[in-house]
Image (tube, rainbow, N blue to C red; front, side, top):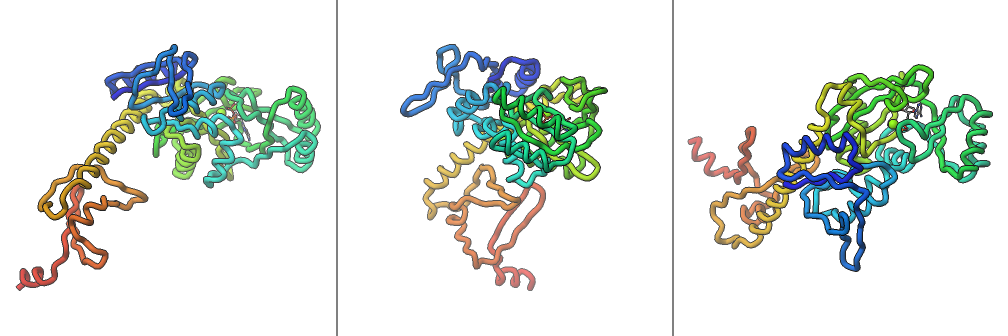
Length: 367
Ligand SMILES: Nc1ncnc2c1ncn2[C@@H]1O[C@H](COP(=O)(O)OP(=O)(O)O)[C@@H](O)[C@H]1O
Ligand SMILES: [Mg+2]
């Protein structure tokens, strides 16, 4: 299996790469700054220093919001060919706090009340109605740098006028009192692989580690854990960090981070988060390989002469959706089962056998 991490080459990306060498035969780093995406009539080609990149089984794209468009283009070119833990939609939604919140809301994840106004005058009308303090935020800020805090209507108004002068889009957001703490969860697939609670530094309103916050390992409640997993799903990401504000009476997700730094959370939790991510990438890539094999088996089954099949051992993977097993159509054809048949199932761990329930034979046996 071959992996490429396309990133800016930050410490966390390189740590994941180092760990990935234990699970992948090839694990390359490609600098996102050296990439061009070439659109042709029939295909999208990704070039690295002018030459098309190799075929990889997994491509993990990291890097800041500044590369959102390029990340989206690269993932569009690779979609369907390569396992991508982050898809085109992840980059569109995940790098923009407002779009993230809208996706979360649509997926029933609790968010702070958030406003987007068309003009400064309309925004000021919103500010007349809200409770204080209030948060103002730019959609692409990170490390706490795009978050503004206003204690009164008067100060909020001055911020709005300044944002208008610099032509900066912003959102207005309900302030959730958490005593300057937030919770960060790293999600990989359907699991939270590490979580911590950060406490902001003295004389600070933001809990970010870059703003002097300190992280401590923190076990999530079941509900908050599900909230984090659901948030990743809402932006179509298999791997991301989710920031959550937990107050006395509610928990709300404020943002996701597609390329989270791992130093802080590794130190706080004493877990090898980079290794967990690398292993997740390998497991998912392997599953896809096996899935492809499964498809080959399905194709092979389609080519079988049903009449001649007597006792066939089929090696395949199962299509399980919402806990329900769906077997390939050929299985129905070969077995000749109909919806009216009564079936007897012999089930134990790792074993399933389905037979027609034949009343006569059973009765004979009993006699
Ligand atoms: N609605 C809010 N209520 C209270 N504090 C907030 C709110 N939004 C953000 N903060 C504080 O600011 C920090 C940074 O906000 P966040 O939206 O995560 O942006 P960033 O991408 O800069 O980390 C949070 O960790 C939290 O401490
Ligand atoms: Mg944050």
